Amino acid sequence: MAVTAQSSELAAVVASTIAPLEARGLAVGRGGRAVLARVELIVAAGERVAVVGANGSGKTTLLRALAGLDRPIAGEVRWGGAGLPRGAERVKRVGVLLQGESATAFTVREQVVLGLGLDRAPAASAAAPVDDALRRMDLHEVAERPTVLLSGGEWQRTLLARALVASPGLLLLDEPTNHLDPARRAELLAILDRLGGAVAVVLATHDLECASRCDRVVVVGRGRVAALGAPQDVLTPPILAESLGVRVRRVEDPEGGTPLLRVVGPS
Amino acid sequence: MNRARSATVAVLVALCGAAIVVGLAVGSSGWRGDALSALLRGDDVVAALRAPRVFLSAIIGASLGVAGVAMQVVLRNDLADPYVLGIAGGASAGAVLSLALFPGVPPGPAAAIGGATATSLVRGIARRGPYDPARLLLAGIAVGSVLASVTGLVLVLAPSERLLRSATFWLFGGLGTPPMRAIAVPAAVFCAGFGWTWARAERLDRLSLGDDVATSLGTDARALRRGLQLVAVVVTATVVAVGGLIGFVGLVAPHAARRLVGATHRRLLPVAALLGALVLIAADTVARSAFSPREVPVGLVTAALGGPLFLWLLRRRPAWR
View (tube, helix red, strand yellow):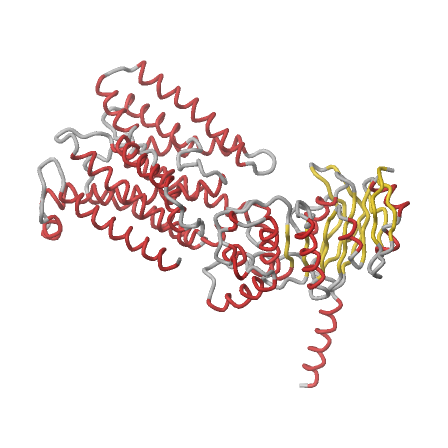
């Protein structure tokens, strides 16, 4: 009995220390040609990491490999200490939001149900997590609306609800604030803040403000990881000038919030 | 919303039942008001001649509806139909060659072999690189047009009137007078194909969102697509072998079903099958009786009947709006 209690405690400790995402010696690219190599990244439970880089620097390619969509050219990715399973187990491990998915005739609720990864008609017990995800994303009032009739912000929140409905330990987002107006962008950033700590998030973004709100930032450029660290150490004018080819100025927030990064021109 | 969808399915089932009864009652030997009791009695005309034809129409229509849904998911294209990957071209060439070379032999088996071979060729050509539905579709069109020219050449070079007549009937769909046992194989293939697809309805939902989304939601997109393609080809080749090329049903039924009950395949598949069966039973009844005692190819009637039905559906607000 005591042994069982000890081993279950040990299992809990081990589970809490296993990183939801671990990339070792990763090289990613298209058609066998690496665009980004030697990536070493361990994302802790509940941590939020931004991947920042210029167009073509390999942000999306890296994210696709981290999502298990493309096989890396070299190296290894592990999710929760293991490979990715199929079916409902996969969506419990990783939620993914890609760029450019078009809305269809599915309703909001049907889209969110698909995020459970079920291979049969959803049972009545599936309604609770779906309703919860709809409420968290403020979609319960449009739940029965076909997604083709949604606004851009509602569609983005639907995709986020679908990625989160199975309560994955890791959420991967590709350019989540792209094409959103300022109000919808602020809304999305607030949602990501609300998730805080419950799920590890890796997001590829051009949005320096979005990146500066993360725990760590990976700056990629010239085929490698140029910098990795806390936003205040990494999102600095010299690093951004070299990696993103952009001149930025740090502006202190008069209300005491995160310093703002103002783009003043190309470097 | 759900009640409206259930009512739609109930109406479709009732319409199919009514179409079967009318199909049994109508024929070149006259109207039979007691069609159902004549069927149960084993009446010569109703049970032996009309019933196999009506049931075969239902099975072919339902098969084309389901194969159409499968092909539209595989190709992620709403204009896809069961014949699009070269089956039509291959089946036509196979049937016409069979009719020209072996006039006494039914052209069905040669058509099925021709269709399946052409699809394998299309798949082989389009296989290079990552999956691209547009490349598969274009390969299907290219192979189809080459085979259409083969069909035309055979018809021009072997212009016996008998060949032209049987080829015309076959190319536009002709069910003939099948014995009841002829229904067994297409019925079994339909049941297996429908069952396989129905069991994977949720995976089809995810695949319809594209390979990346499907994969990220835990579906093995490649394996599912391969299976769906195989099911669509086998089901289509089987019905082509017994009924020739019957156009429009496999395109219209999935579209109409989507507009009636939305995009979820758990509802879409049975409704597409019901609509396909309904359209073909009705079309075949017209084909048998409109110019009685002469019969017109059923494919001509499906286009003539299905066209206006489809236009009406296009004007109507879809269920999901």
